[in-house]
Image (cartoon, rainbow, N blue to C red; front, side, top):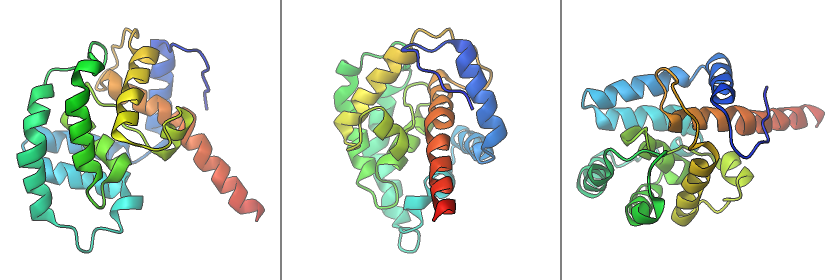
Length: 204
């Protein structure tokens, strides 16, 4: 599994990690399914698919009494107007200082929902704007120095991703740069950490 230490990453390195992701992570197909649901107007279904597959560790504790109606109202009334303001924004060119207020608002609304929380918030935001938002998880947050997972942390994380990857001439088929970054982070950070945990459990 590749590990890259340079401050700025090349398109070849990103492509390599995306190829590894496709081979190693079979849940990747759920992401494609969720995007298609979004395109067809099945937003709530897309969100639940991602939460139930890529945010299951958190979502499983909320499934029994999850307020679906309240969730839909929150998305439609509170989140979608903000998403609409951010439509067309891309990681490569975004001015995060100007967008900070909207990003913080979305992140705080979503991360406060039981079953979504911090990791889930980044995933739902990405689904709504795959060009702007980069997903994260606990391992990725910690590696980049944003262990608290606050809305401010997430804005700073996006700035860091822009600085590290924003100059890549990305032509990856079927993946935005923001998604390619997620696959890079997942294969170089999350998967090695999960493997460490598995090895530690074997030793006990």
